[in-house]
Amino acid sequence: MTMRRRLSACVLLLLVLAGQQAAAKKYAAIFNFGDSLVDAGNLVVDGIPEYLATAKLPYGMTYFGYPTGRCSDGRLVVDFIAQELGLPLLPPSKARNATFHHGANFAITGATALDTSYFVAKGLGKTVWNSGSLHTQIKWLQEMKPKICSSPEECRGLFRRSLFIVGEFGGNDYNSPLFAFRPLEEVHEFVGDVVNSIGEGIEKLIAEGAVELVVPGVLPIGCFPVYLSIFRKQPEMYGGKSGCIKDLNTLSWVHNVALQRKIVELRKKHADVRIMDAKAEAEGVLRGGGRGGVQLQPDVQVRRARRVRVRRPLQPLELGRHPPHGGVLRPHRQGLALRALRRPAHRRQPEPRV
Image 1 (cartoon, one colour):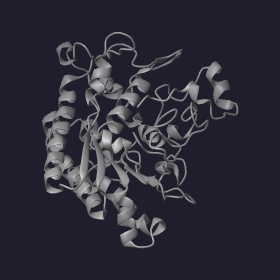
Image 2 (tube, rainbow, N blue to C red; image 1 turned 180 degrees about the horizontal axis):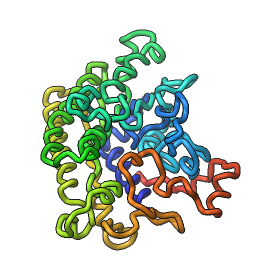
Image 3 (cartoon, rainbow, N blue to C red; image 1 turned 45 degrees about the horizontal axis):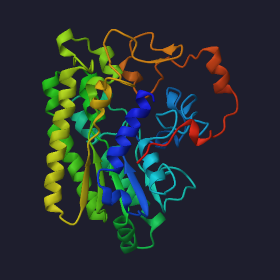
């Protein structure tokens, strides 16, 4: 099993099994909010920007047979959750002529927990290229209500029978100052505002009628190839087992601890609401010795798939926009990308066991 599929399966299990009672429950719909990790195509609904590689093959080729705007060659974690719960894949909320009675995916690539104005005030406007924050996505939900309900009471009833997945949020909030090479101490000062913004978003959804929510934390930032490439550290600054940048992973840990405290606070305030804390324990996968283990190191190739690999350092603006190989495929892959593709049999991409 590849690291990416192991990581997806790990996160999926944590999301779905965060509460066995919730996982066994029959939901009427799923409403999903987030960034590129769960964007099902909102970014490309109004057209495909030239720079956006995720709207072109080989993205989407292993399951759908064509690009969907997902930052994946197949399905996303939220897709597996929907299928496991017996629901159709969630359409992007901006899709035209789509039916949203079983839910919608409001996530959009580049989304932040904080509104764009926050970053502009800190002189970071150029590092936030998308204004689809959590609170903007909640506005999209509110604007959608007349399409799926005949009255506010009917919407509240639907939302009470639905699962809300809120995030992850925070990754792009921290990318903004990190890509501007702000001191890490300054980046840590963002944590309280980011977590409070997520908490405010959760309360807005509860006010709309949500009673079952899953709130993922951020992944270990120090393990991202883009950061391993642009931040060169002394050997002692890397994890001995993971090869990840320790002080960046500390930032992720601080965020997740603060988020867990916020969730505990909200549980006490809203005793009739289930808020599930999904801990994406990706570090265990990255450390994992033995079969399938992955160790990231700063001075080796960060990706290998046959003959396609990273040949040069990644630049910050490439994250989520360009494939690591620069869009240049070897002939044996060009033929695969050009021919007509069909949805493969599922045994070619085994389902995670949940």
